[in-house]
Length: 531
Image 1: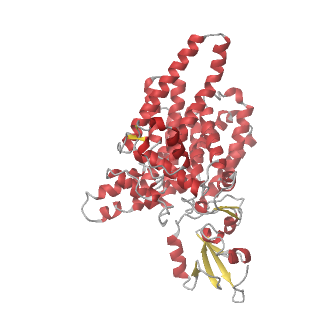
Image 2: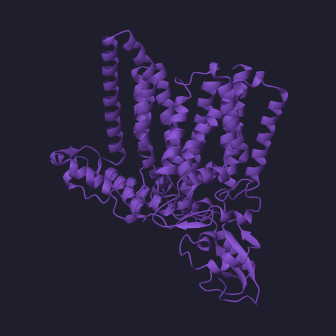
C-alpha cells in the first residue's frame, strides 16, 4: 500500500469515527420523535411477515424500517436480562440508522474521489461529517436518511453503468434502483430523473447520427434503450415484491380501494385494464395512494408555518428555499457557490454530461418538486436527499486547488473552520440547528417551526428543567403569569393558532430549553386579555 492510499484510508477512518462519535454522543438523552414508533412498528410487521397497511399512519412506512426493528426481533430469542432489555427498546433501532449513515458517508467519499481525486473525497466526507441535518436524522428510526442513502447509491451505480456499460453494471444499477423503492416513496422520482439523464445525454449523439442520416445506429440505440428499460423495470418489480414479501401481488387494479384523486382517476381511465393483475405488492400502491391522499387533504400534518405566517390547506411556494437559507450552515452555502463558480471558470476540465449531470439532475429535480409541488412543508428532513450530491460536487473545488492562489486556499480552510465551529456549537441538539442568520437562537421560531425545531425529541430536557423550576407552567391552556414554558410549535400556532397569540404578540422569551421549548417570565401586572 503506497503512502497516498494509506493517507486516504486514514482520512476515511478518522472522519467516520468523528461522525460516529457525533451521532452516538448526541443521541443519549433524546426522546423518541413523533414518528419513530410508527416506523418501528411497521418494520416489525415486515419481520413478522405482515406488510399490510391497516392503520392510518402506516402510509409512508417502508420495508427499510425492518432493519431498525431487527434488534427487537432478535430479542425474542434471547433469555431475559440486560441484553434483551437493551435490544427490545425502540431507541436501540437508532444505532442501525447510524450504521447506514456511515455507509452513505463512504459513498460520498468514494464518488467524490472517483470524480475529483483523493483530496476531494476527504473534503466531501468532511462536509458530510459536519452536516447538522445529516447528523440529526442519522440517529432516528425514520426513513429520511434511508432515502438520502438510496438515492445517492442508486445514482452512483447508474453513473457507473451509463459510463462503463456491461450487464454486470446494469444489474447492480437496477438492483440499487429497486432497493431504493423500499426506503421511501420519494425515491420513486429516480425513474423520471434517470430517464431525463438518458435523454439529455442522448441529444448530442442523436443529433450527430441524424445529420449523418445513420438510421441503423439510431434504431440500434433505441432498441438497446428499450431492452435496458424493460430490464430495469423487471428487476425493480422483483425487488419491490421481495421487500413487501410478495403480499397480494397480482391484485387486479379494479380491486384496489384508492383514496387519492390521482390514483382514482388512473383507475377510472384504465377501465379496460381492470381485469389485468398489477404485479406489485398491494401495500406498495396502497401506501403511495395513502401518502398522496393525506398530502392532498392535509391529514398527515398540521398547519404550515413560515416567517410568522400560518397556512392551512396550502403551503408556501419556495418554502424550502427559506429552509435551505436558514438551516444549512452558511459556510456550506458559500462553498457551494464557490464550487459552482470554480466549475464554470474551469469548465473545460470537466465533462458535465458524463459526470456532473448525475449530481445536478437529482438536486434540481427534488429542489423544484419540494418547493413548488410538495404540500407537506414540515421540515428540512425531506430535503436532505439532495445534500450528499452537494457535498460530492463541492469536491470539484479540489480539481483546481493546486492552481488556486494562497488567499483562496486560506478562504477554504477558514470556511471549514467556521463550519465545524457552527455545527459543534449546537451539540447535541441538531434537529434544532439554525445557521448564524439567526444569531439569537431564541428567535428561531420567528422563521421556521415544526420538525425544523421540535419533533418531540427533547422531553428529557424539559423534565430536567421542570425538576429544577417546579413552579413553571408548561403549555398553559389560558393566559397566566409567572414562569411559562411553551413548546415552539404550540407557540407559533402549528396546532391551534389562536391559543398563544397573547404570548407571542406581547412577550419575548428569556430563555430556551434545548431550543424546542421557550421560557417566558410574565409579570403579575400583565393583563390576561392582552392581544
